[in-house]
Length: 578
Ligand code: FDA
Image (cartoon, rainbow, N blue to C red; front, side, top):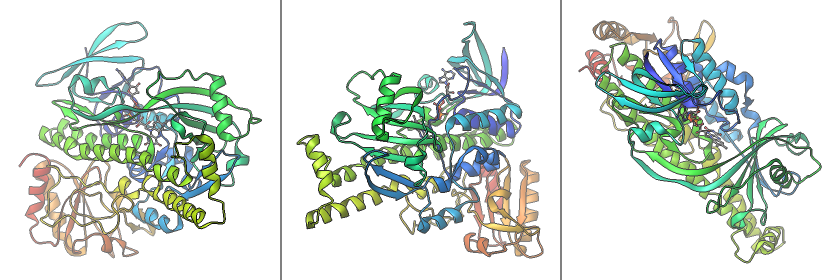
């Protein structure tokens, strides 16, 4: 029988990221995946700063950036009647508004980008395999049995039909929105699947003449009369600028899924482009459903689920693969410490406690973002039940020289600006604060969000939050606090008057067997607070400390250099050994 430490089912963003992190941390793992290769369609694109920070920590950020479309080309989200037709309005998106750009730039050393999933997965998976992951393609997970020491999974080789077993100490179910693993371990789910029907049409066409002057990832097309339900709304989504595209187009969920052959696909593409002279090469079509479902628990015994297996939602806000990669990053260091015998298995309970609330939040947000198109339809008069001709007349009415039309124009402007909650929801992407046994409170109350918590990121070193990013100086070069943290180990930040923390960290490491890398930030030290940013962000005195977990979330902090014994206690508590 094949034996390993961690068996991963699935090679999507969640499974491949889990394999990459585990292999980076030196943990034996086997990955099985059902198909012969990775994602063959672009699917997820938007890659937010939290995810880029993780990829940076895992050493693949540059590889991703080399293939991605940069943030500055993601910004002109357009609402129009077709790409060639009338433009109804625009919103500056993904942090590209001059007023928002500073928020994004200050929040992270990493920029958001647009990276199609079919390009992302080979980077995650390839690096995982290069670092030690043993992968088996065309291998389908069938069932599992757990006992006190491990999990035995039965899998089928889809090439020769042979069934065999793999024994692992832990199993990760990263097998997507129809997860068999989640079903087999009976994870409780809330919500429902199949809220609406959508089709994807992937095609090649040079659309430069319609888009290059307003570069964006998303072009929303509103064509009353072109679709089911009275509102014809479709999305033309950039895959590669400006010659590869993905159209998302709705179908009636109460009817059987439509047959989308090349003829139908070309027709839809031409309709949305508004120019049927453009040559179209359809490369794939598929149908999928909008889901609103999340698991309230992510684990059972030695089996942990992540990604779409536990949060299923529409692509709005671009949160799916981001959250999947972040789930993997959260679990991997915990599994590594438990498997190395440095932490008690109870550390693993914090995975569920920390990630299930995030899953619930993103499923709710993504579905709400769909509903928030309603005011745009309303302002354009597309909710009128007197038929398509009337809807088109309503859209036209906004151009008139009348007070009613002025009101309509104002309503449309407000409705489009409100889509900030989908396209500039920096807080949704960045504000995760964990509450679990793997975070030791310092007795201070949770900081209030000073600005809208969905739109704005609020950096804090409050235990449970992500370590704030500040540029430091090292030998004249800039390095982020996040570059010092991570790398599969704990780190501790203090200042020149906090030398006592270095000794405390050495003692805590000796006691727990878990290394803690200490960074004293100040003049004459290896790292200097050149801009004074760290002093603004650290929220502890210069002689205090901020203890950071391997996943760059703050584990614990102290205001000053008294009470250094608290460090070992905090470490033991986090490791489940107190
Ligand atoms: P995913 O479904 O990707 O992978 C599951 C894996 O499990 C696959 O490798 C599959 O082969 C394997 N598998 C399944 N059953 C198995 C079995 N029995 N045995 C072995 N292997 C098995 N997200 C985002 O962050 N930004 C975005 O912009 C978008 N945009 C977007 C657009 C569209 C049109 C769609 C449909 C989706 C998005 N998403 C997105 C969502 C994103 O694609 C999705 O959230 C991630 O792929 C989820 O990653 P997972 O790894 O969890 O599952």
